Image (cartoon, rainbow, N blue to C red; front, side, top):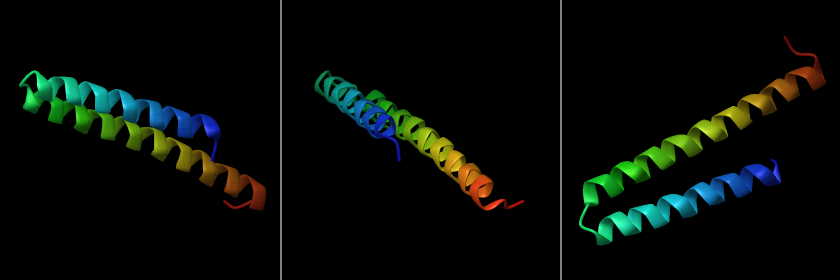
Length: 65
């Protein structure tokens, strides 16, 4: 697992947390929930890409087809 991946996921988490807090404080709870859901989807997309790269690497190391 790359350190850049950890920093990216943490950065997205902090950004989503701040945006959700600001939106909740301004009375826009539905938008805050939407921002949170979109943040989770983006992080899952990044993680799935990394897992795909890991499987490709394992296949190439062990010469699997």
